[in-house]
Amino acid sequence: MNLALFQPLLNLKATNRVLFQPIADIVPSDILPLVNLIDSEDEPNVLLEQTVVPGAKPQDCLFKKRKTCLEDKSSASSSLKISAIFSPSLMLDGRAVTMDDSAWRDHASTKVSDLKSLEATRDQLIKDNELLKVSAEEAQRCYKELNHDFEQFKVQTANSRKSYEDQLADLQLKASQTAKNNIDLEAEKLSYSTQIDEAKSTILSLTARYDGELLQLRTDSKQLSFAQECAVKGMNEKLLSLEAAIKQKDADCEAWYKDMDAKSKAAVAEQVRVKVAAFMKSVQSKSLASLAPPASNPLEAENKHLKA
Image 1: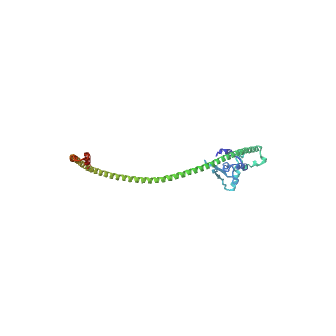
Image 2: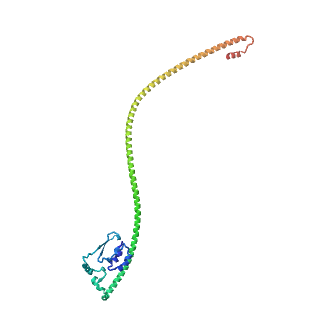
C-alpha cells in the first residue's frame, strides 16, 4: 500500500478527538492504525510506537505501547505539570504549551496575535482535514481495488491450486501405475531371461545331439555307400549276365524260329503234296468215271471233294 497518501496526516502536528473523529469514521479499520496519532483518554502519558514489518499487510502492523511508570502520585502530578500536552502544534512563544502555561486560557489576557495564530492554525487544520478526507477516500478506493484484486487472486490461486492438485493426483496415479508397470516389466524380464537361458541350454543340447547324429549319419553313409557300391557292382554283373542270357535266348529263339519255319514250310509242302496227290488221284478216278454213262461235271465233283 502506498503510504505517501497518508503523508499529510503524518505531517499533521496538532489535532483533537472532536476533529479527528469524522476522519476516523471514513478511514477503514485496517488503515486506521497507520494514521493513529491520538493518545488514549484513560492513559494520557502513553506514547504509541508503531513498528511496520517490511512487506507485511496493514492489519499485520505491530503496535507497541510504552508506558511511563510513575513511582508515586506526587511525582505523577509534578510530571503532569511539566510534561507537554500531546498537541505538538500548540506552541507558545516558540515552545510547547504545558500545564504551567494555563494563562493562555484566560480570555482576558488573550492577545490578538494569539487569536490570529489560533485562527490560522484552525484554518490549517481545516485544510489538513480536507486533505485527510481526500487521502482517506483515495486510500479507501485503493483498499477496495486491492481487496478486489486480492479476492481475484484468491480465486485464481484456488483454481490454480485445484488444477495443480488434480495434476499432482494424476501424476501420482501415473507414477504408481508406472511403478506397477515397472514391477510387471521386471517380472516379465526375469521370465524372458529364464526362457532365454532354457532356450540356450536346449540349443546346446540339440546342437550336441545334432552333431552326434550327423557323425552317425556320416558313418552310416560311408557304410551304405560301400554297400551300395557293392550292390551296384553286383547288379551290373547281374545285368551283364542277364544281357548275355537274353542274347543267348534271342539266338536260341531265332534258331528255333528258323527251325520251326523250315519245319512248317516242309509240313505245308508235305500237306500240299498230299492234297495234290489226293486231288490227282481223284481226278484220275473221275476221268475213269467219265467214260461211264453221263457223269457229273468234273469241276463240281472237285468242288465237292474240296469241300469234303
